[in-house]
Image (tube, rainbow, N blue to C red; front, side, top):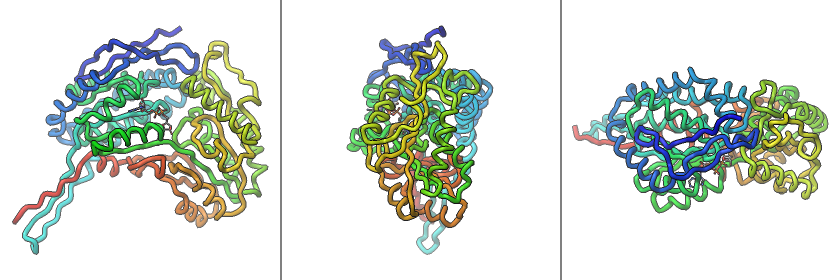
Length: 484
Ligand code: NAD
């Protein structure tokens, strides 16, 4: 058995123990993986104080000087990719090939991209002789940024916030998910190794109601970037409303795919398989309901179910395993509960949970596994078609017309993303314009360009992040008008 990691908070450049701890489990075995600090108000106050103290110096540095630190951390992270990839997989439950090829390289890219791209977003100026003035606009860092991240893409999403927050001159107090804190703690060691000034990055571990709440309502934290569930986002928005903070909320989704009969069905099925089941269906952008044109419905189902059945599920360290474990026992129970709701609501479970045998190695018997599950026969207003399950469960339904499918896809409280599959370019664009979501992929999925705005509409979020949007979010504009 691997030894249990004891994590410490990273405050003002030093690692500090905490009196209380929370057990964090390895999802693939059910064994304790780490003990993380159960921090509260006291630790959060210390961290915010340190970040506030570090702000004047850090924000006075040039973009180049701040960028140097980020680039050095990116280089170190890249050099230790394998170590981080294994730790992320063990902590989160996803296959190591995925953390090696997606999560950790993307974390490296997040730091490099923002360090290079944001400095090129220049201030604007105007000379107005008729007014006798010259105007110019500066963008200034906001202050101590509170960063709250979830467990599904731990280092990937944390660095998506850290990169732009730091390069723009903010100091940071971050609170990673209590379920997956290990790689964030490892990253603090890299910040220490490159000699980042004390207090610029502070990492306080703990659960949402204690550590998270203490961060978001702290009066000296004027800006919050949150990624997580809609329920928590709503709670944070309500708790912080009287404090008028700058806020970015990236929340839940219930993402649809629309498959027209003229699409390249082979390519569509293989991408839909990935978009439904990668990371055990625990990517906010995963597809959870597929609308298939009646002409190709039977064909699609046959191909999709056969392919889903063939996906290997088991020990995340094995290279040919496509799906590892769900992140926690309560989450696994929630996913299974939803499959139960599908049965109650008249759905047919075509494969997966309750239909196919789960066959994982002996040492993974205590892990949190659910087979890829495909459901048909549900009405659009059923629980599985409307609520976020966030697991390897996909519902498939048929449609007849373009107008009909637009209105059915838009019949959702969420609006994060969608994908459209057709070889008709005009139809692809019409659909893309009609769907009420933050991102539409046509004939592809999860191709991400960090320069493009990312975020959702409706209950999926408020605000956008990406090069220009992150720059604007993590800075405040100031117009300076000078008489000439
Ligand atoms: P969660 O809302 O339970 O937790 C997210 C973070 O918020 C954690 O760090 C948690 O400790 C913290 N938190 C909880 N209560 C808090 C409080 N009262 N005050 C401050 N912080 C608090 O979400 P999760 O279960 O970790 O993540 C899964 C959810 O995240 C899914 O709904 C998924 O769709 C969403 N998600 C969205 C995106 C996106 O970009 N839109 C990306 C990834 C995940």
